[in-house]
Image (cartoon, rainbow, N blue to C red; front, side, top):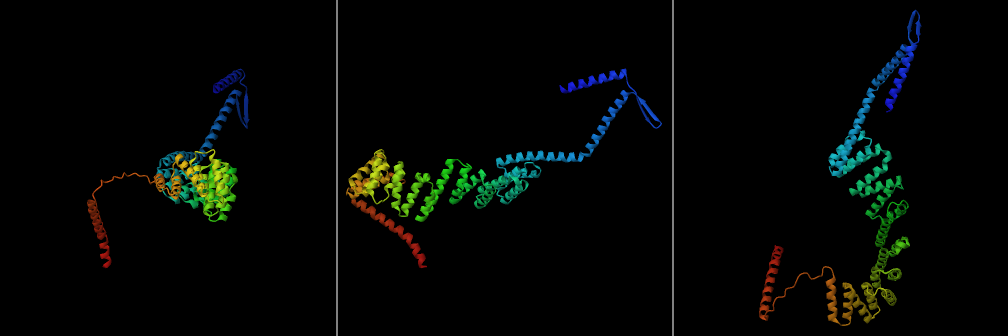
Amino acid sequence: MKVLFLCLATLFVAVIIAIMAMKDPGYVLFAVGTWTVETTLALMVVVLIVSFFLLYFLIRSGIKMVAVPRDLRHWKKQRRERKAIKLLTQGLIDLAEGRWQSAEKKVVKYAESSDASLLNYLAAARAAQAQGADQRRDHYLKLAHENHPSADIAVGLTQAELQLKQNQLEQCLATLRHLHQLAPKHVQVLKVLAGLYQRLGDWEHLLDLMPLLRKHKAMKADVMGDLAQQAYLALLQKAGSFADLSNVWSRIPTPVQESENILMMYVQRLLVLGESDLAEPLLRHGLQRRFSDALLMCYGKIEGAEPTRQLALVESLLVEHERDAVALLTAGRLSLRCKLWGKARSYLEASVNVEPTAEAYNELGTLLERMNETEAAAECFREGLRLVPGCEQTTPIMMEPATSPAIALTNQMAQESEIRNVVASTVKPATVEGAK
């Protein structure tokens, strides 16, 4: 629409100029020495306009002729870039489909001409590692860093990821520590480094990294909590002396100390190190805060200085948990320790009735055996044994019909003779060989 309007306006102006020229064409005289040129003004204007456009065309043509080599180079460059993008796309498809060799060739061919050469080299590094060519992988990563120095974090993270997949943990740790020095606040670097510390079992460095993980929200709060708890559990289990154990325990925040897993591990280590006097108050406070079968089971096995006090605590918990099998078993054990045989029997029988377990049957059988109730004790041991994994009776026992004493004696003599023959045939060759 604009072009049409412009054409109409030009035509309108031309018509007006033509009409004016017809009424008064004007007069122009040029005199140079003895030469004179006379013409109308209208013709002179037309000649000037045509000359201007002709000169403009000649100048533009000359400029284009001079720029031909440059334009040709530019065209070749664009052509190579289009090919590079096309091959990069095909290479990434091959990489996703597992055609590693083809992917490496395609992404490397025009990598130097590509505007996205970083992607080319990173993809080539992945393809090379998939073929087990670690040296080529490192070469491509080096080229990626040299061509894109500003992308050192991206290149380093890719290198760390590939080293992790190749199980090159020490090299990966060196790479990530270097990246952490370059970018201490980078979330992905912190996250990958924490995962590597967890994999290496380097719990001290993992705990040192926790403040930065929380500050920069590199992980979800529950994930970081699980990581910290795993680290504290490993350090508690690793402590070989009471001093080391106390040192680790003092570093654990109070809310984490109150968690069931941490408290159980600390108490178990105290018991192993012979510090049951310290374990009992901790479990007592833990049970007073919340009811836990795991804590109760451990509490019943502690030989504290005041078993009656332990029993009183468990009996207070039974008021609200009278049908809890573990609480009843713990009360029975503590009653045994207090030498309250009747009460112990009642608690153990109640525990078996609520939920039969091998431990409860064993405690009850031991008590009945001490009370000279051997048949009842044997029955408890049998029932408890059936509840032990792997001790269930799976093969039916077929009893043979009774035989006369004479036949039984004959069968026994035959079996003994057969056994002697087997033993003799087994021992004789070894004896002869030794004599030789």
